[in-house]
Length: 114
Image 1: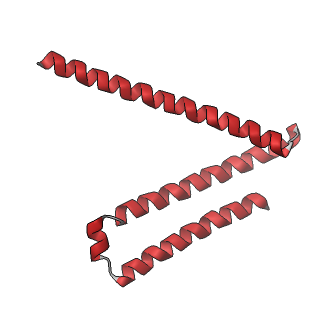
Image 2: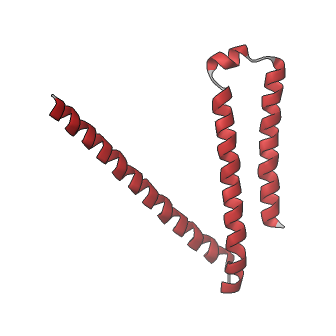
Image 3: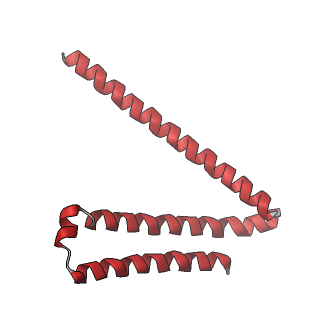
């Protein structure tokens, strides 16, 4: 019985690791395709690319960071029990956070454009 359990756990663990590797590979491939597409569509020269990509990458990283913080905040506050107990003040605070997050995303986009 111990052997079966060990083999089963090892199989599950191996499957999880191989899937994680494939996901990472797919993300890298998608990122490469995205870079190629944007470079082609914008007709960037080498000089323009050198200036553009650090700005764009910083933009994407900031967007990802803002979304991650936003998601974590909502998950922490959005259980059914917490929603039932939420006061009007808490609801207004949550709405303010939503607006603030959207404003942060907008400001980040604005920096990319200017």
